[in-house]
Length: 161
Image 1 (cartoon, helix red, strand yellow):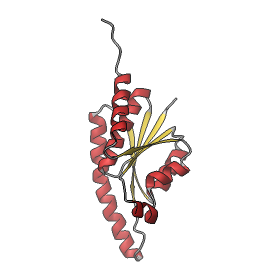
Image 2 (spheres, one colour):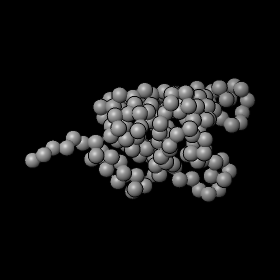
Image 3 (cartoon, helix red, strand yellow):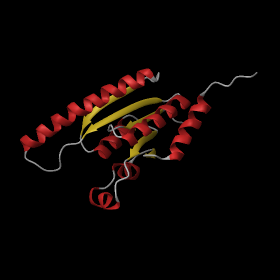
Image 4 (cartoon, helix red, strand yellow):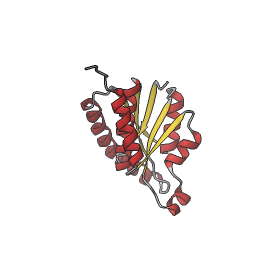
């Protein structure tokens, strides 16, 4: 049974698809939904540059988080939403461990093979280290849209004529 779902969101189109999937899953199972937005510090730069980049990312992701909270309220979902600083995969796995999350939902941007080799994929790292089940929703993934639609249909109350 799924009791707690964690959605990793970065404001991308694939994260929006993951949002729809996670909300449908939460409604279907009556699960608690946690949303985590992670402001990633720069990999290079001195301390002053890094701090400025972190503050800029926090401002940007605070806007993303505010919009998500409004969307969640409009969708009738009671969720906990957090903004943290760090590496996205590490923060998602840590949050899942600390909050006994049963299922993590993340989007996948579809980086090129070279980009995945060079910097890795947050989704791949989450799958590798998560303490629970993980659903990776690919951008434009028709199967994910069908699954979300079926989850929503299954959650709808049944009526007899």
